[in-house]
Length: 443
Image (cartoon, helix red, strand yellow):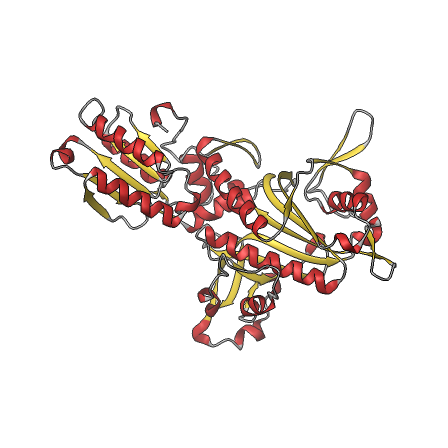
């Protein structure tokens, strides 16, 4: 993509309403624009990252055997009355009435609707296990939306729902999602730590939050630092196998948010291994048994011909929230530093002097990289070099290639690693080959 043809409204000044790093940098880098309190328009650069994150989430859900569908954003209040949550949920739920005076709501979550879909079609234990997910915009009317998309009112979320015959099978479904989440966040360059969590309005008695460490996190967290060195399950993970050994390895070391913190248990961790920090929640999983299936009549006939309520779990990932969390974990004084796997473009190509011999070299590099699947943002604007460098550092593309007449006289271009600041002078051909190999290995 040529920057002269792209929509990238970079801001020189930080808007007053931006309180944390990710909000400041997303606004300055032209990734989003606030339309009303807690509601944002996703501009092209931000939307590209959002879609990269969504793709990774989808791939790991599919790998774990979860089946994708799409449910509507507007739900009938009658379903929530069946479960008993319509009045209990509180003011975060946006309640509306249609033209026929029917009570409706803008869905903050989908346990009731997915249970209704399940009970309409599934009758026998032979159709289990079943796990369904979708990625959809949701709305929760936060009393004080703040921190940009970190705590907005409208947000993009992946939510999955498992249906199993009994508690043992449901626990295996929970374990599958636990492992899928470890893999999902690792692919984005994040070390997400599972921590036992309160189930809140979702219900149930088993729950884990997945937390990444960041100084601007909303939660105080306490952990045994050994958990930071645990290996993430690989691509060859068999999701049909017994996953409990993996789960045990991740849940045995102490890790808790302030809500679930046990000072006595934390004190038993060696003092040299105690870590207290702040963290950002990026995922949350729940097992809640028959909380929804029983009152809503989601039953199956078991092998003895007896009708029993199914055991359920739900599993959320804040897709839009992840974008902000990634920035909180990956930035410096000059701007964002994107991991290759979620970067809006892999390479920023800077033409130091449009109209010179740099044009031909830039065009050749651009075509070669794009043909190899390396996404390039080509700054072909006729503007000063300092502005080009500042823009590229701000938007945080993993690699920059700087092409100018002076370097070309020596047959060289400059390649900069945004994360490390390392710079290399290479021939255009060597630069292209190195970038292609590096991006493929990190994607």
